[in-house]
Length: 133
Image 1 (cartoon, rainbow, N blue to C red):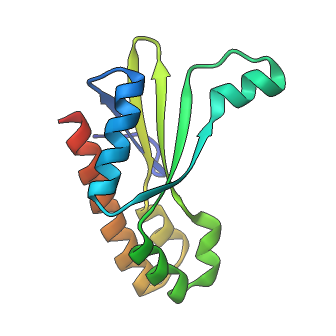
Image 2: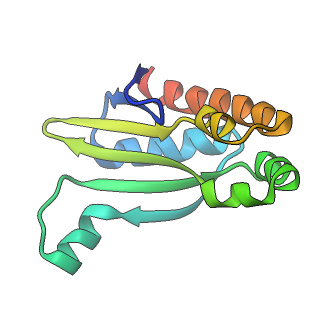
Image 3: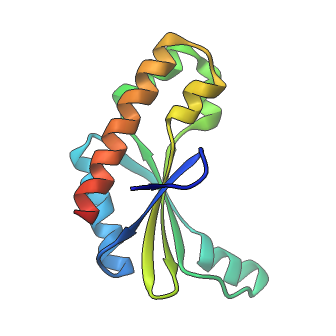
């Protein structure tokens, strides 16, 4: 996985867009994450602004056990949830981008948030790694 900015981790998928979306959902589920929402960014921008943008889908992923631990420790962490995983078309390639959960630990100085962020990071990376091989 390639790290881009400190807040995101981006990698290239070996398969087409729709297959990537399905593979990411299955991989997230295997790591204990449910997809709480799907936001079709490109479809929304087309509908609202008639803008043609690369195909982009945001998957709002949540691991209930990790979320509960984080919310119990710091209720306002809800403003940073869920963990977003993005599938986007970039020319001929499909990219998978995920939020870097460790950034939350940098924003919120709390030992339980550190522990949750570390576990979320490991699980999200394992999910994405299983998709890209």
